[in-house]
Image 1 (tube, rainbow, N blue to C red):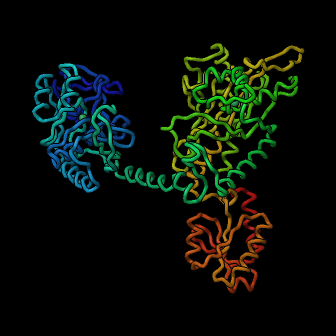
Image 2 (tube, rainbow, N blue to C red; image 1 turned 180 degrees about the horizontal axis):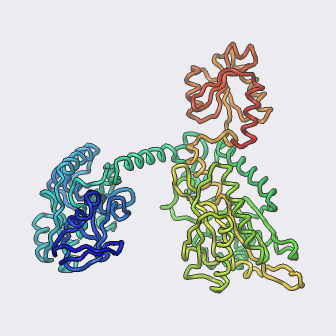
Length: 636
Ligand SMILES: [Zn+2]
Ligand SMILES: [Zn+2]
């Protein structure tokens, strides 16, 4: 007899050789319908697996996290079947599941075309409609090799040669057979909802010395609705891509003549940045920070003391010589702030001491990782360093945390993941110091009542940290804010304060950035709003649209009046038709369009339209300004 011990601890007995599918069916027809594979003593098995003797058995239904990769990978077999049917000479490589779907690598004499993808997809749907079972068979290494050789599948021969004898299995569905360890869905009818998306080149075994194969990508999800939602999210993300919007809305650019990863902020992007910087400064002053500026280059001596030269040189640009002394472009603002701190003695009464700077730094990044504003080589951190007494650090971390949350809220970002990163293997400072610091980070977070996760070993070598990953409106996380302990620099620079008993004491040092860097945050902001910035951030808040040339003067007068009241206004006095001008302003995502014709010019009114297309009708300029100013004041 076979005995299946179920996850709840109960057991059921069956004749030896009963399949997992029949076990599922004996428990309930719903389970049999939803099961994809089973787990027997911890190993994933096909539903056709025959149970012998006693074993722990768990049936995995399609809503379980383990099911989706198996469904995706099984669909890759169906893809290979379809390609083989349409292109009998194709050579098959591998077809694993990936995030959001799966791929399969092929060697073909000509490139796949979009039309090919459509016919392949149609062929796959036929196979799925036929609902043919996946059948597993075992083969000796010699037999497998001979069989694959005969089938003209050199990549599969290579794969089989790498496997130990006795572990080689084939899976067949319909006329198609593939070397594979499994497990798979019971039959093609259980394939996930999928869509072939694109083809790209991929080297066999990821090695550029090998032949370039063609990789067909697909997205796949359990339910058609999930697939649709995913495709809609991808479409939306494409529309919101900050690199695309950056061009369309004339916000920033990069230049080959200047070099990779070096951003030029155009007037409209710079306007948004200057608004962010202004509110940043105001809020920092209100939160008890002092503002500083420090030089962009410093003698190597500074970075010798800080240890950057020894530990961070790979990210620093080469030295330049000035007056027979070597200088470096600054990669971090911290040493500069420490210099300011050390210019005089500090009493315990002054603590915590908070120094903030919009500090521009330059760091080397590999060319391959540069892309848009998210990874650049020159950027401005919204940096600050806090020096405090050890007993103040928990309150101080909590203050910073609340400040971050409050500040992000101004930009409509209320959703984030919180991580506490702990001691990595290579670290300075005693385990005891680390434990104490991590405990104070955790206590501070516990006081916020927000859930957080622990990133074991994810801290920097010089201290643990809290990372905040902002989730944008599409739910994508972005690493921006960070609150970072430092055991290293206060020691290296011999930073101290005078305690109550007149002794010299080492302060705790915290590095923190609310936004991370202005460049990266701008990328998040553009994608979060899809370029339609709220009124208070919009670089152009209103565009005057004269209906005909004779209204230009009245329109310019209105614009001047609005500008005097603090609004950012431009006038489209081109000779285009009104509808075209309105469409153009909406494409530039200008919040308000103020149309001026005969009626408006005569009565001192404007016809107000929103970028959404809503027509608010004609109103006196004063009335428009009142509502406008109220919105800007509320940062709406
Ligand atoms: Zn497989
Ligand atoms: Zn720092």
